[in-house]
Image (cartoon, rainbow, N blue to C red; front, side):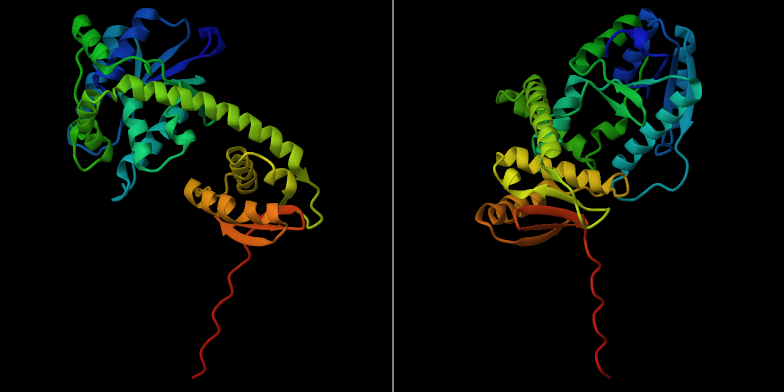
Length: 327
């Protein structure tokens, strides 16, 4: 994350578990040289969550750190609850950081969390970008999100808390079989016996992140070179089809994904799914461009039209309403 002087202040996300408690304790011992605020997000999903937040506040005061409890209010979805809770947590943390003048949010994700993330994304059929796991740092709504413990095993943080006398709690949802991450967590010891350890999964993520960065840079360069003027007006993007078809498939796929993302902007929560984009682009659009044919396919609300040596991306045309049947 670079030197501490690069940041004005930091918000520490502390739930009260051993990982985040170690983050708070180590930050207090190190005194980073910038203002620190400890934040506990109370999702209100368990009866004991308010008491856990209060426990974090007590330890934070003992360590000489300011503390805030952030409540997730409003209706809670029945489906994909953990995803919604995660999004709410980051939103609340970012809002607090802006309120207190901080530009850095720190979480206590560990090596074990990274391994679980890679396994979850593998089960979901993710490509290299997904399997690269969590990045040590990333942008968060105009701020920086940092994960300083991403290469540290959870067991080491537990031992640190116990040695220092920093009390912590264990979230029962971490072992709740209703959640996919908890079910995969039970598999990790079995996989480790076969050699697929958390460390190896984390190294895989690092290698894929490195390779994905190189492919993404190549795709960005290619996209700039392949863009052509569009006589059809705004809201569309025209690419040199022959140049696109001459690229390696892995780069061509990313070029079109970048072009689609640029057209969609932040207006949609549904970017093209990798499997569908692979099927359409690699199986139909690129063969049409290479053979001088035509092809029109839709994906994620966009129309991909190949023909005349070009690939045009634009909004999907409205669907025709079915004609009423005669009485």
